[in-house]
Length: 119
Image 1: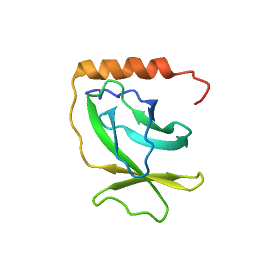
Image 2: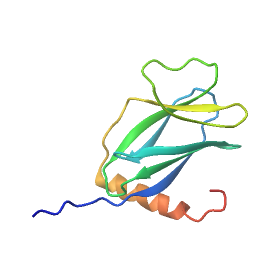
Image 3: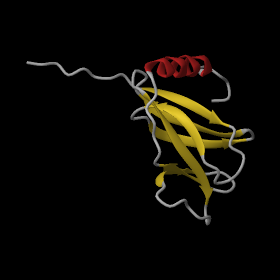
Image 4: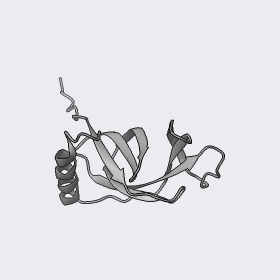
């Protein structure tokens, strides 16, 4: 009988200083990261994702759109969140694999942000 290794999963948060509506923002995330929540703030927006911290890192590009605005062609819908107005998050399909060194740097950055009061 063989035993399948189960990857551990954690929630990580990314903060973007995106200021212009529908301006693409590129973030580095572990491969297979699943966006579970997004929220706008006074300083941009935040994305939370379920990740395997041991996975290779990919660059992923996101765009926020408010209700009634045009959506970039080929963008994949990820979800919506209420604000004033309601925002919708889409992913543009451009991914690039990064090194294990980059993965370690991202993991350290995410670990430093845990426990912050603005989460």
